[in-house]
Length: 133
Length: 311
Image (cartoon, rainbow over all chains, first blue to last red):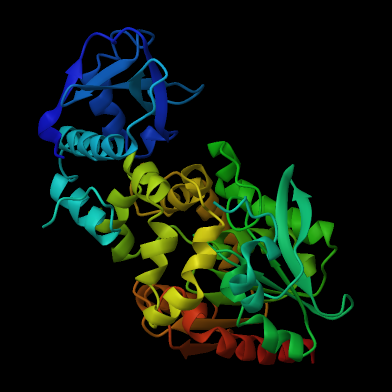
């Protein structure tokens, strides 16, 4: 799975529940990540609007941005899969989609971060979703 | 699926045979801390402090020579790792909190005349305790650790794998969901990888079975200063530098000859400059997790050093 299938969505599908997958409490550790997300989801203009939405090959994901007193917004983000009704999460697909989202994020943040560096790191740590070199 | 491990015995015979000690618990700053406390209660105490992503088990081969030499040996699991509580609140994992947890432990056990052995994050946390409770500490042993903002390691400044590994959302994925630290992280930083896979790996993975348990494994790497304006711990390390550099407590330096994470140059060399009075350095077979390759030899070195301090 690559970032190619990832796109920003605008409408949250009805009847879906959020299944938490990743919680990032410290986006501001490398603030370029927070900046990219702020621009991509228009957070400067509307920090208290609805959650951000992504689709990976049509499968919906939700990003809930977190604020914390005394720290720049967004200081964190929760990433959840949107799953219809009470259907179980397809865990393998979600894991692959998360990798695609990380590649999309890394591409958006830009240098010195790169998808190649992400993939190299994934291979070193034997992350199953990492594409072969 | 095994239940959640609360004690060493819960981890099964493989771990219990290699770490045959009684699980003890106390609370520090409101959190449950696991530790072992072996040897005569009135014997001179040695405190062994681990870092990321290990737990007291790291010291399993180091403990017997110290016990045989007549010392009391105390080995806590840092809050967030091992059999201690694993808080999910990020604020529980500030470097100040972790150092304060060790202050609380030595107060709670009323330890005096301590020899403190620091490895990895056991250094910045343990040395913070040493500065705060200097009256309780007799000597310090330093292994593959640091106490300053600069020099940082070339390894820690690299984008890949170090900075990418714990980058926003990547850290929770690679090190959280996929447990990269106890698995590949330690494996790549030992010399005898076959032995590590046979003796160590399962014990490190068993105590952080779920993604949320591994939070500290990706939060701690972010706290290593790398000379960037976004370093989050500069204030703490400035305080630590100021206090640690002029310390003239008896000290010993023990390093892995093959350490490429906290490489001899600049890390051991900086300690030698800061503490010219320190004995050693004792170079042993080992990379960053030198106890995995030379644990018993380190125990013998520590026992001799602690014995000199007593005499």
